[in-house]
Amino acid sequence: MLAILAALAVSWLAMTWLFERHIERRETAELIRTGQMLAASVRLEPTGAPAVEATPTDPRLRKAMGGLYWQVSTPAGLKTSTSLWDQTLRAPEAAPADDWGSRIAAGPFGDRLLLVERSVRPDRNGPAALIQVASDEKGLRAARQEFGRDLALFLAGLWVVLSAAAALQVTLGLAPLARVRDDLARLRKSPSARMSDEHPQEIAPLAEAINALAEAREGDLARARRRAGDLAHSLKTPLAALSAQSRRAREAGAAEAADGLDAAIAAVSSALEAELARARAAAAREAAFAAEAAPLAVAERLVAVLERTADGERLIFDVEIPVELRVPVSEDAVTEMLGALIENAARFARRQVRVSGEAGVLRVEDDGPGMDEGRAEAALARGARLDEAGPGHGLGLAIVRDLGESSGAVLSMDRSELGGLRVTIAWTA
Image 1 (spheres, helix red, strand yellow):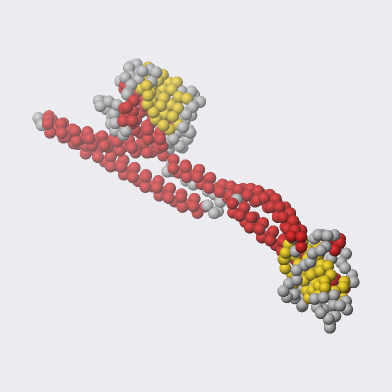
Image 2: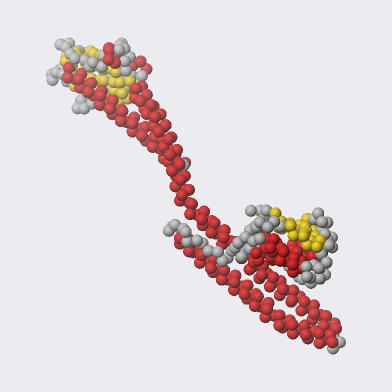
């Protein structure tokens, strides 16, 4: 819009100048025709003074300060139009004799004049007569201003139209990039996603290059997870053999050596379990945006399993999730998140665990001892534990947070109305 405005401003200046030159040429041509009429009718008196037999009939010439003037002068005298009244036109230092000359000069009555002049010889043996015809420049200035004003109004309207057309062109031209942005958002959320084929010819090479990059990235991730999982599984058999050796050492009376060996085995087993958990979480994150999930069915299925465990058989599970509620993640991701949260709640609850939900929010609460506010962030760290006893490696809450963040959700902890801990998963979009 600024570029169009600058171009139109330059156009206004150029066209105003061209118009001024045009009307000046037209006025000059008109003055020359008047001068030619005077030259055809001028004669010399015996005294050498000029006489004009037929004068032009323009009404401005008959009115004082009429804006149009003529003057014929010789060394012996001069003849002027009525419009000059008691004024005269200033003679040039050297008047052209072969053609009409034009100039802007100061004139009578404080005005500036457009003046044409030429020296002619009415009598071959007599003196030369200087013919001058002039018009007031105020008329030219008024015409130029009126034209400039009308042209400015027209160009302002043209600027509005061209700016709207430019905005439409840019909008339509960049519209395909919005589709590219949406495709890239899907690529960011899921390595298995690809750029769509519905792109203009100009953007198709970019989409193909991005798809090639996405395929290479997905292949690298799959190979890395596969190698990590293979490594973890391949180490389980040697660890089982080491555990058997530790038991034999303990039975043989080497209890201290067996304790050290058991501690080392436990540390390696913890690292293996962590790596397998990360692989499961990564796989769940890839599919997190594949479809929507109904959390009610997932929660009921998890509760049905936990009610048969040692921690769950003594508890009351309340599931208060609307049937129509959907959350923007896959069913596997919901199972991974709710499974870890309900299992933690069952471990600490005294009597009751409640699972509830509303639009974009899932909550898991218990009536256990709860948790201090300062421990919330520490509990979400990978490998941290709400308690130091019992099985597990402290990966559940961290995996829940990772899955939540990858799907656009926020995980928070506070005090429940039941008296214990309340964990909330809220999808902001």
